[in-house]
Length: 174
Image (cartoon, rainbow, N blue to C red; front, side, top):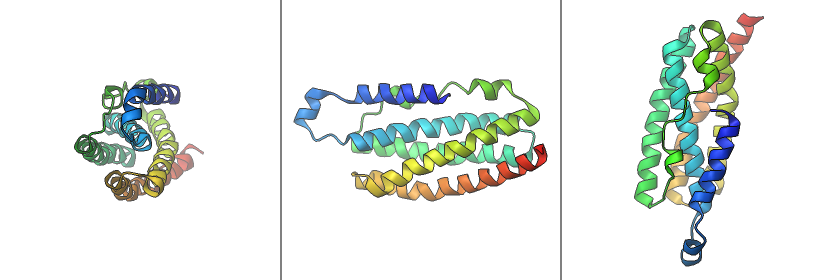
């Protein structure tokens, strides 16, 4: 999914979540809802791209990383959705439906796939780490904040792993 599509979905989700009549009668925590939507979309994208990497990657470390993304982000996604449901947060279906696989990844193969996947994962994980760090520090809902703090260590491990893989992919390309 391209960043333009992500931005559109986030804007759409924000509009779908804001109900002026309800906001007047309840103290809605839009920061938490926004975090849940962003975290869900990000996690689903990682699962989708990771599935492709597990199938198509040429390098064993890229294939293994893809499998790890499916497992780790799948588990985190399940936890996030259970948490959102238990807290009564309404998450729009656009943020819970599997994304359309990234067209560039579906078309790429071999070394090109590996390079493209890795180069997409580095900035994607940087953004996700920042998202979780911000909510872990500034979040309002204690349970969702605890989820962000707990998941953050996993995301930092992912970032370190994909950065190391990126360095080796760059070395081979030179």
